[in-house]
Image (cartoon, rainbow, N blue to C red; front, side, top):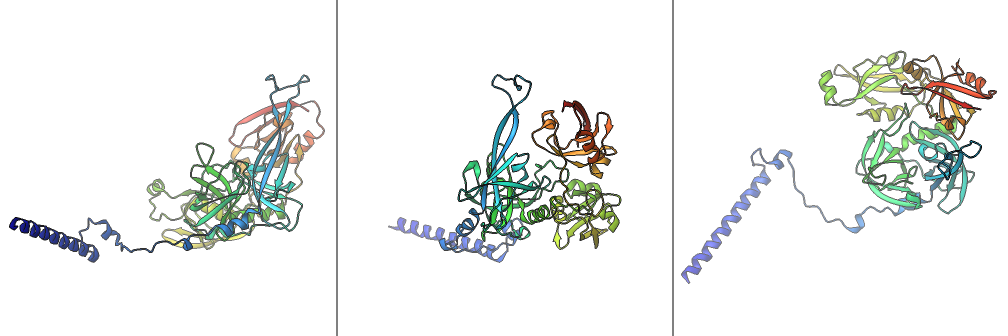
Length: 477
């Protein structure tokens, strides 16, 4: 009995000491008396018991889905390409290549009641025919109003009225962590809705080949797959905040992240295509760099927020306004910019001739400058899209001043778009700048038209690609 009492007393003493020790440790946590090795003290964190989330507090996606699904369309595109014959010979008995009808598909978003539809440029690029199918299965042949490879956007139009549409939201107000829905037609599965959050903003993933590209994507983990391109990214109110454009994947299918063009940029591009037929891009005339550890060490920078001005274009908007190499651009208007994609997106919302305030850090002090933006030719003109010169399956534009300077050419005519025709069959690629035909210089579109419109027999075309590679092509007309 005595032994049992001793054991019981021992147990009680141990329990008491344990309780006192626990209380002491708790008091240290609660009063902040732990040593500096304690992480919680360093973070000065207070722990709070949160109430359990009830079902009624969960985000409801049904309203946004219902509002958007009827305004997202299925876009089918048809192409005529050259193919090998049944026996592996690409030519028929008369030496002609065999045509083949190909089909592809994507998505689009109705943005007005009278049938304007936004989609991706890569969805409709080079298409001979574009067909749009609504959520109620009605189909229409769509007209391509205009395209913009620099943002991967295109504007379509169908002849219909009183259509459901998705109103523009404000992509500047979108927050990382905010719920969004992706609506589209993945794998030809029409009217598909997936949910996720905004994972990041102003992402540049290097997928657009255009020289003047703007990549400032909204990144989301909402599932997006082939066929979703051109579809809607909407917030929980059903407002359009982006146009789905790309995925990050090693398999070709969704593996966790997708990317959408922010709607504030979409809005500007669509307005330009309706009003002018082409996008009016304003340029500030600087070469820029993100501020990273290498640049900080190289330039001895003390400020790490903003975009570094690495060079200026003579006679450009920035140079004329008084900016200098080494300045750090921190704001465009009232919008803070911390990366090159953000700066490009903000400037990309303006047209040539627009006046834009930028805030610059120089020698540790902030200063504001008013810039008058230029077009790519260095002036402030707004140029409406002329009827494109369409010869041999190509549309053309004069080489820009930047292209002429970079490639050291006096002039030239760039192939801006290729459809089925002689040029494509000869192996010429989009972006090729024609500098001579049959050894005669080609400086402008007028020269090109004169050289080709009445041409018969063989023709020799010489020119250069944007990367500087020269090329020669010969074919019969």
